[in-house]
Structures are given as C-alpha cells and as structure tokens.
Amino acid sequence: MTEQVQESATPLDTAKLIAGLVIIVAGLVGFYMLGTWPIWGRWLLVLGGLALGALVGLQSYQGKSFWQFVLSSRVELRKVVWRDRDAPSTLAVTGVVMFVVLILTLFFWGLDAVLAALTRWLTGRGS
Image (cartoon, rainbow, N blue to C red; front, side, top):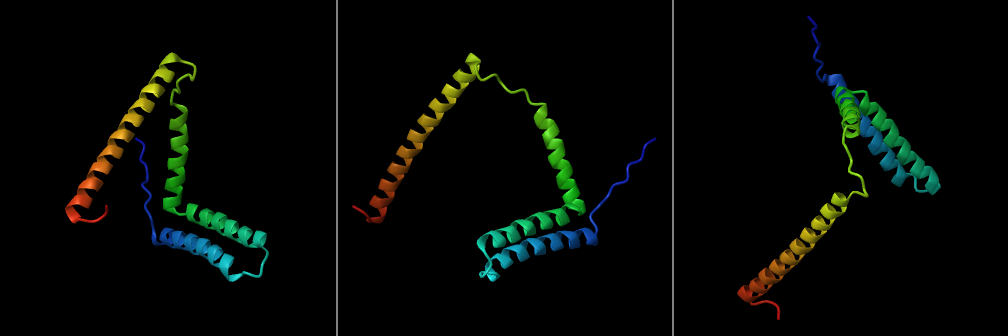
C-alpha cells in the first residue's frame, strides 16, 4: 500500500510569498527613486526584482503548486489534436464564426442605438 504525504502551506511559505512580493515592489520603487541612473540600469533593476521575486515566490508551497500546474498544463496542451489549416472544414467553421460575429456585432450596435435613443427621450437630454 502506498501512502502519500499531503503537504500544506506553512507560515514560512507565507513569508516566502511576502518576501517575493517585497522584492518585486522594491525593484519597482527603485526604478522611480533612482532617477539619476541611466534608463537601462533602472529597467535592469526592475527586471532583476521581478526575476528574483518570482524565484523566491516559487520556493513556497503555493509557488511549487503553481509550477506543477504549469507543467501539467503543458502536458495536456500536447495532447490536443489541432486541425489541419488546409482542411475544408476548418475554413468552413472559420467562415461561420466570422459570419456569426458580424451578425451579433450589428445586433448589439442596433440595440445600443435604440437604448441610447430611448434613454435620451426619457431623460430629455441630447438632441
């Protein structure tokens, strides 16, 4: 029998998330506070803060769970069977979608115009 140990978030994980957020905010604040630095250096500070903050955040339980979700999403995305672009059904479905979008666009444009005119008539504003 195999037993799996369920991990859960601890106060240390919360501290890691807060530390990651503080690092990101420090990078952004540094961009504005160090206005005498060249712009490339300030942007490098922001990008470094984002990268370091993300790395610290990914060390927490929540960050590890998020990274596992990203990896499993990539696996699931590889399982998707994409239609061939040259297939006649692909072009037909695309045409139907474009036609429905056009019809719905005209419908909502007309509905908006009628409701705007009704609102102007009821409130007595406008021309």
